[in-house]
Length: 567
Image (cartoon, rainbow, N blue to C red; front, side, top):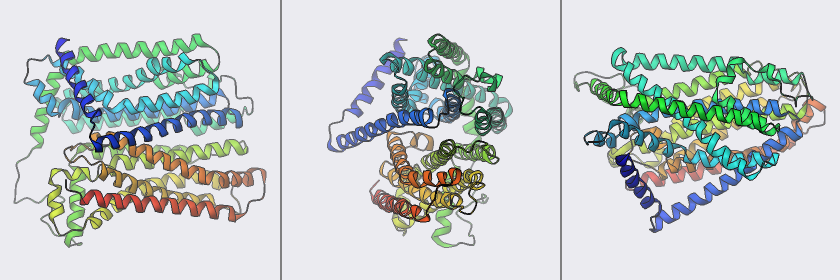
């Protein structure tokens, strides 16, 4: 314990020294971060309050359905945190230079593990704590919860929920490393991916949000009662369900049952934490040795006579600098195995979402419910665009690394390099966004009759949203570039990445505000047959496109400036 506190003390000192740097540039950056975080916290509070008020007050959806949606979102959040921690913890616990340094010192291996685990958890989760607190604050003010609800929920529900996801991740990771030494790393990872994929498919087949809406709508407007018979039995074993139950029972004025759900979450987290420590004492050092063997086996000797699948020495049909840059971008992308794993995860999640909404057919022709359902699907599309761009576009310039001077010294204009990175990122993001957009609009197009605007709006929105978000992540990714970091996940978890994500969310919120009025009028036209003029979409569509184009132009200029800087 003394060694752990010693390491923790100097880590805190280094963090405080970096935080309270009174030079001009760090002060300006800190003030900018404070303003952006403050504005986003206010926005998160307003979002939590207004969404709760709108869903429960305007649409009369009811507590049951609203908290089942919260449970589903928490499940997705738990799985995202879990899978992300598996990949990030591999770099932190096994490939970190600091771990290699500690392993040469007379420090217990469990101390090294515990220190790096906490380091990784708080490094990647601090911002999420603040955002969760702002959303809980907005949610709680709608119900008039007392002041101690907020601190208690954050400390004893939200933080244990996220900590549980990280504990499961690190336990799975140590299992992967132990099994990889016997069966091979690729075999173990393929098996793990199959298990996770099967679990996600099982969850969404049993808790399909679209099917849930249709089943609950049969009781409309009497959906305020707790319809426990609609819950699959295995949901009671999921942490996301425990959190949603805690919030539901408090809103239902049943504090005893709410505390029981929170107690179940806390006891499970504490028990798993003890198990993780026991496993770390016995197996962490062995698994670290396995990671060294895996890295050594992957470092095959260079054979100058052998051409790789994508080789800069081989000439293809493109010729010239375009071919060389495309090959470089490909090799930069695939050199980190986590890139392909995360890309596959994103594609799978997109496919699951498309499959779940492809047969959407709401039986109740109520304008508010249909509009809320559409906005939820639209918000998912925006969140997908933001997540993919943050994960794959934001690190694009940083991944050039310390050797970026080689590319900068070549006869290649910075504008050309930025344009290529933008096009590649746009193809990836727009492809996924277009699929989600068309799938989201297809069920509603069945009601459109003689005025099928929604599919065209979906394609228009996917194009401009993807272009703006990709440009924003490319520009700010260059501005906050970390050329010394090779891990793209850690780059996408930095403070600069967080600021970029928050700026993206603000931008998407502005887009929703722009299209909300014509969209609500259009749904009134579909379901209560009020007149709708096509001219209502002209001005919002123009503002939508001009704002997105402005973001593309300014962000591209920032990216060019960042590339021109001396690294």
